Image (cartoon, rainbow, N blue to C red; front, side, top):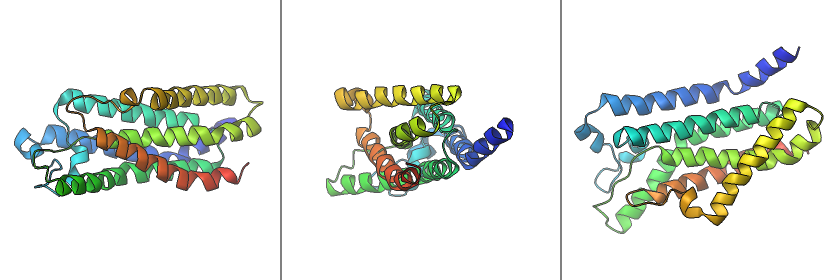
Length: 222
């Protein structure tokens, strides 16, 4: 019976796993399937507004691709593992939020960046990469972890495995929030040539959408 319940819980995250695979595949396809000239034409800039839809999948160099994919996959797996004990409605809402963020963060952040580029006539600027989505998923983890603390304490305090996940949730969320508050330049990877606006924009999109979707679901169980 325990195995079946765990299997059912994992099945609720099926769309998240499929979405993760599709997203990684698209990033790899764009990276290995396009030459440098073709890829540069898919970046976001004032003269290339179509980059709102394509720039998320374009990466400059293998290090850029690897770092984003590693961060994205690790965050996805942590969200999956940390929320397995959650009620079914909560799991489904988390999965829905993840899928929305996966495919809406890029266009939303890209649209805002394009308007900023256009308003200031910054023809010299361009943007690409999936880091906005990575930060949106990190925001989803922080929100789900913060909301799950009272729920986990109330419902799963007697289960050893749930206690371990509870501690992991609190610890990781604490590290991320501490970094955000005390060293925001580290949290948002501020460095020359890095599109920090996309990082901040992705995080804000993830934060707002996650709160909007998850808060009503968690309230039902508190």
